Length: 229
Length: 93
Image (cartoon, rainbow over all chains, first blue to last red; front, side):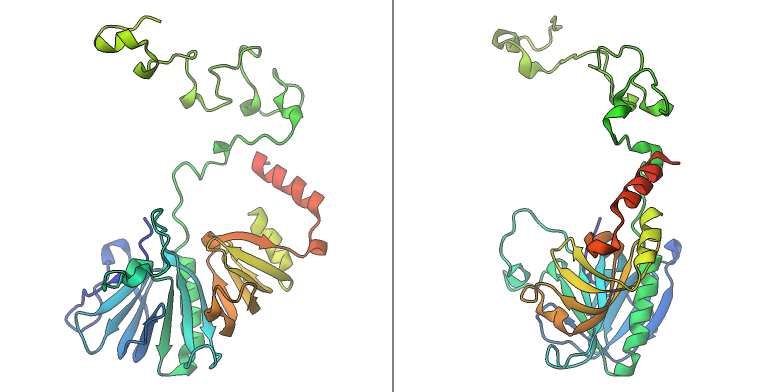
């Protein structure tokens, strides 16, 4: 499930963030003296940026309860931003993929009731006080993005899972020429009802509808009787 | 791997990447990886009003999973070749 930006305050004794070592998460880079700006909000500092193999963590130096984290899986784009007219300091600009809520239309959802909803933040800037480090940070972000490809669903790996049709000549039944076995519509070519074109799990004996919504009205009273259609 | 190979051949050309959040970025294709993560150089944003913050960005890294379309230069595409190659790959040949 894609979460987006969230609060993060789990620290170890030395102030560094607690990582999920059981899943193999490791620290890739630490950048002290980094300020963070979420969305259109003003910049927050001072803080330290911790880049792990799974996510980005910013921990406030001033407030031990304050910190933010976002998984690399949720970072759609990252770039170095240097134009002083667009933003006062050179920074790493990132876009965060946000799960869109169907009910929402309001662009100002972030602070609708005074409380910041981090999961709606779509842009984040990281401003290191040492701007010579920007290219290094950009490269680390690239590396970590590559370490976090989309998780593969179990079925998706199998190339045979797709039954795409490419042209009319593939609909010939009984194997006309070059066909692979998976393209043949078996047994009764004149009746395709109930056959599922290869995916047997969805094939049904015939069109058997046992849904009581289709029952005649008077039969609805006797729900436990067997239906005889 | 077809499109990974295809995009590798397009490195150096101008493309426009349209993301699933509707942002469209034009730039020179710098590199691509097996996940179709894309690095663009000399970027400029197509719809500047929507994402004003991107104006100052010149190079960027785009996660492959958020790409909706990659718009290719019309004379940079051999449609028939691509068509045949895609068909072969889908059949598992």
